[in-house]
Image (cartoon, rainbow, N blue to C red):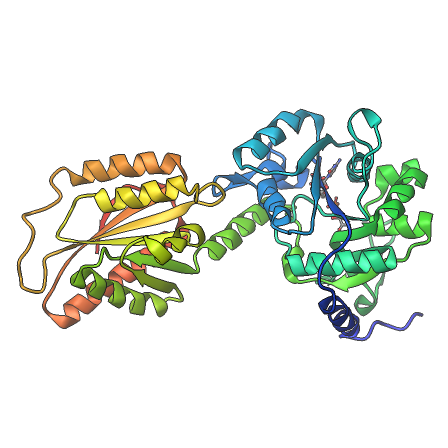
Length: 432
Ligand SMILES: Nc1ccn([C@@H]2O[C@H](COP(=O)(O)OP(=O)(O)OP(=O)(O)O)[C@@H](O)[C@H]2O)c(=O)n1
Ligand SMILES: O=C(CO)[C@H](O)[C@H](O)COP(=O)(O)O
């Protein structure tokens, strides 16, 4: 019996690889990606193939493509889809401004789809030859959460070894069963790992492996690393990856993916005060209260000058108005976000916090005559551009405890609206 892999064995190898990679200034060879997306997603029980199922107004595959588009040393992306999904895929590329993406049609099995994608990287239009990549990364289109540093590890290892693949510890014991459906024996779990994606290959290795493999491999195989070993004698370097490499397989996985994206978008907020002392005081109180709710808040007077950079890095904005129910400030923020095309890939949240009353006891004339209707109209238009506008109204109180409670309530409501990003509440003027 082979000796079990000692716990930490792979992390020791990875540490050496980390050091090896750390010494590299950049990827100085062409790298391409093949994203197999030609499946039907039967295990989700949904009619729409899971790679095209949407959350936060975007299909799953668009999140994965974006992940690779952000990697500067990846030159091209090939997405492999079923023939009947070609038009849908082209529409997604157009709608979400994906670039450097070539779409080819898939096959009846994952291996056939992947081979179509690999082949497309060396055969240009009409079968003419094209410059092929040195390394090709293969990554299931339904695995949206992969980080650049891990892609770099896989890519460098593939260049060094010919092939490399992500692995994860098994979470369930693997057993062998008898034909009658009884336990034959259980495998020693420490000797096995789950093979995940991404995987990387020297282009010629995986291309030749697919040219040499059998029909049975194409029909029943699920492991590219096996083909490289079996048909090219190339033994892949195995690298333990983070738990985020999981594959969307069941319907629940789509909900999990949405939750992860929402969490990523809900780490911080930018409060814009317009510069008034009272709005700034409220903003600072909100900042303090929201920090206790794990929300990092920045307070600025306006989205101008250096502060305008928030427009391109923040997903959540709070606009504080004092005794002024006009929406011009919110309208200006909305226009700036639309001009920056900020909500193309993710929904942006704007919360209008409307403070009535002031320290000297004066109060605006009873507000909100026609404003709720105007608020709803503004929010309805904004939603079409993937910007979610909510309103929270609060009354100033000179009684410190009461005022503190009001501010805390606004902080809680703001965090909830940001974290949930529900289109259902847009345009509502909530009472704190
Ligand atoms: N003929 C196929 C089958 C699968 N895939 C892709 O391979 C990846 C991983 O496969 P899997 O999770 O099994 O997807 P499906 O085959 O769609 O799922 P199911 O088995 O539930 O139908 C997915 O991105 C899937 O779209 C593909 O490109 N071509
Ligand atoms: O991890 C993988 C190979 O290394 C593949 O993602 C996995 O094998 C696909 O299997 P299935 O199509 O049944 O989901």
